[in-house]
Image 1 (tube, rainbow, N blue to C red):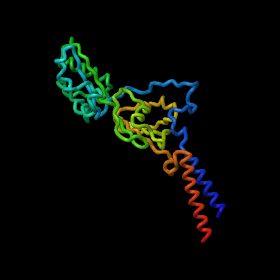
Image 2: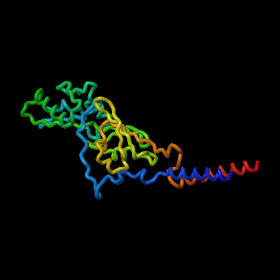
Image 3: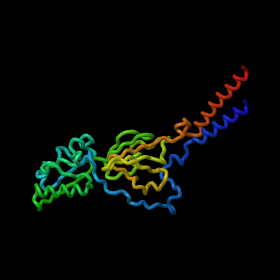
Image 4: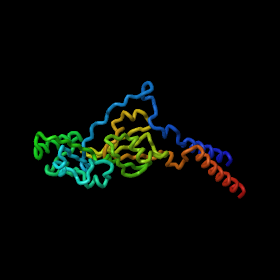
Length: 265
């Protein structure tokens, strides 16, 4: 009986202490032998974003005479800045419908699906000159996404997040959501990304500095970032050696008590 108890205790101790969360589990962008010397050249792998259905655009038309452009700009609009608020952007922005069109004052429907922001600016400006302004008119068109909207779920601050930036990397996105919990698996973060033909799931290891060269290092609008729990969380192990020691002491106490109780029967 004593021998069996000893074996059980050894097994429990081994399991719990091997389940401790270490620095390798929580430190971002470690050198895992994937870089040369002491630095890494970050390659520009992110391509210009091409707008999708349900994206909201903020479009501002400017000219020397503001009265000429007032019809194109929403009342109280400020070009999609943070002061306008997400609700203001929803009501005053231009939502891309299921056919890939936006409804623009005077010009009517303009198809922008699959266009980049720069291409949309040029397209709107060309249509304005052709239909409304004279060719000599000095107009300036600015187009921006009404915030970079993404969703975080799992072992991270869960919710829909919006950042008013043109480019956001995944580290910034997670930091804005409250960062990954200690029990989150940073080695296999899932990014669910929308494409014209549907959704695809991509994987990125945020503990490896090579992640900075991943095409998924920079997030895109409507991305869903899913952080899975570490396997050691599933077995209920503590996050630190002290927590595991407490668990071992509790289990040991139960085993010893059970042994003496059965012995005295």
